[in-house]
Length: 187
Image 1: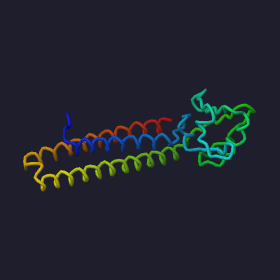
Image 2: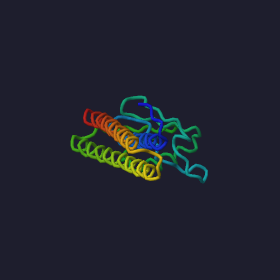
Image 3: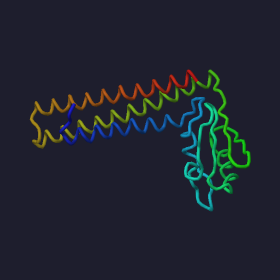
């Protein structure tokens, strides 16, 4: 559907941003598999400045449940290890002198269900964001109608388009959530 109305274009962009934010949040949820994005939020002290791990080390996945953190500067190894220990990951790093191995433990069934609930909650937050975008777009359209920019028929068409955008974004969010839930529950 080609969208020509700037209000709807902006709404569509904001809905896509809500979906992207959901993807980022879900990337931080540990699903029992090694994923380099698990370490995205962790920063270590590097010469007096908090530096994200992915800027000071190569993060690889040599095995399905193992993350390997190889610092570019070996002197930063201890600081990286401290940062991982201090994080909320709940994973103990194994330092071999040149790299740090993180073995991702297998998730229990109970923990999987908890994570699935968290995923659903994130999905619901994304849907709320999408609905808020729709509300803003509808208000802008009604204001435009009141100001004489749109006729009644145009307003109804644009409102229908806004609703279709919202419905599609909702389906996209549902698909993202379903994929992540499946990943978590299958482990």
